[in-house]
Length: 227
Image (cartoon, rainbow, N blue to C red; front, side):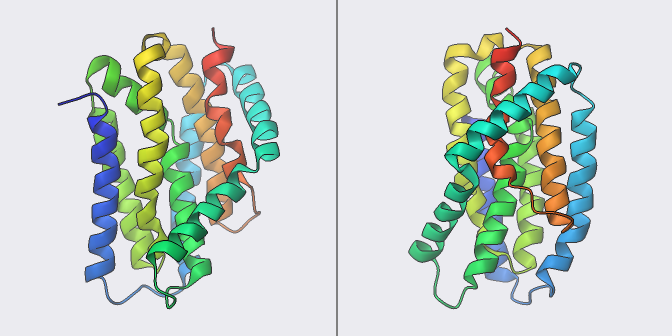
């Protein structure tokens, strides 16, 4: 195997299960928004669990605030949505609901890249040749995409592309700074990721629209604050 194989497996499995779902699941589960409610509860619960892993709340606090400010200025979530629009225009027919397509793509993308495994996994892959974390993540991501696709969210399959780009970046980073990611940093990243997942869960439950995509950069900040 080669460094980065975990991300390739993660991305490929999501694309594969998404395509299989779209081909073989002909009868969609109705009420797309309502079907997201149990997923919202699960994501919210996962976010709370991950947040508790962060041992230093100050690091989490400043990471989220700094990441949110920078990300909002860069309008990251808007760029993710525009990429979803591009994918719809480029690869989908006109009979595919554009709004639902973009919503499902954005939802799936935010869930699969805001979790701490999306960052820590590639580092373990490169530094220790350990793909266990990314294999676990692949199974979780595939279930998510299967659920969203069967509910009519055809854009979820393209979250595999987001995984390849996002985790591919961290795979490259791991070659240079992989050895500095210690337990303190990984726990802080988990804590920040938990906060973002709580935001995604709130969005899925329809309680309030939180632009979690703008907060993605928060996941990078603990690497610098814990030196």
